[in-house]
Image (tube, rainbow, N blue to C red):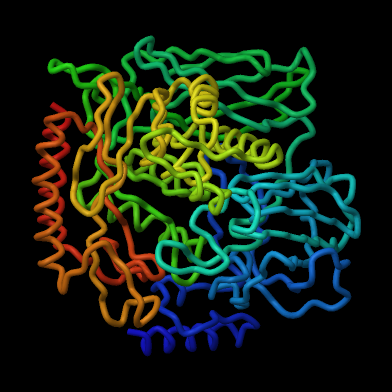
Length: 602
């Protein structure tokens, strides 16, 4: 396998004219790594919920340098880095740690197309981990903190007529600071993974009118057959307005004109409802009018669906989708790749794990202490999979010292840490709000950085009342939110029960199988329990599914199996880390999963 991979990569180098880039290291890689062309990396439109016709992708080879923190921009850069892959990844072409005492510098040039004349130009970053400063033609144009959400700058006043120089400086001390970092650590081992520093999602330019849509917030209400849409517009004036149209294919089913910054309530008669079995999406067209003329046009989509909870005939709280009981059964999904780390090597790779999860009969994914690019959620929306969205954890060292599952002990954060948590959590909710697949918010996991649980829970519920709230997955438990979430390894078990809330098994399983030739490291591989072949793994999986059924009858309304893929030293995935081998018998797992979902949805 490895020999064939490097043969393909060598041929790719020949075709690409001996590129300045090549993957680094000798660890396993995915099949998609061999298809990368440095001149055409992740070329898909990066923001499907708010799409315009014209844009320019800035992914590709940039200059880079790793320097001691606080040093000025280097006069000479050290080499080339392939954006948007983090410096520590193989696919960046660098594969070097940056660390807490250094900064990562980027540099490239670009030109603005002539047909953009008269337009404002926005510079977009999908995500950069963690603290970013951006310079254009030697002028600092802005900063951003937060490693998981998109941000942009209006660079129009600072553009030259010809070539423009773009420079980016990034600092990230990973687990040495208070910022959210998820599973990243400076010394990876066991369940903790390699640090990710710098640009890890698409960088792009977009020409817009001076008055243009900046945000879109769609909220379905199936009970009243309404879709509420609120848009934000830059530089709007009182007389400006928007027209929002809803289409079922080519058929216009609803339309409304509204002044800006107010919600438009669009009535959709007999709406087609979104679900994992029927993920129907309506197309949206938003036009902004100023002085009677259209100044901006944006394409989007939305779904009519409702997520709620209700007590069943036996007095047990159940989760409901579209006013019907639905058991949420999914995988713990870390979202890591051996070659790109946080970044999938292609859009096909990004979609692949979702497709395999559905093929295995699951209807949900718990996105574990990571936030994905917008296209991942777009694929979930299109393919039909429910998403429980974690907040990436931070302040990990301090949280372990105060961890107590039963008495509710919490971490006391510094003011800076608390303020940053609140800022990043709000940005994540805003970023994902209009994706119909996202149905549950999870602010904390296993007491990692858990603080002011009731306060954070009530704020989240108030900020987005349209979704269920899982305040602490497997963590310190408080009487708040909609869900009590237990973790138990390896087998399913219910050791607490809350009559007032939905009860779920937020993590279990972790059945390990080390597949030779598909391992991140040859030794020190870890799983909760280890088996020798896919049949043994499947036998154990099916046994757990049968055990789970008795707990479903007694009160569990959802469950999360650990995990989708192997990750670095963890070998408890349903697939190998390189996605080359399924470690279970698909048909048997799918049958077991569908039986659990059916039982829990009655």
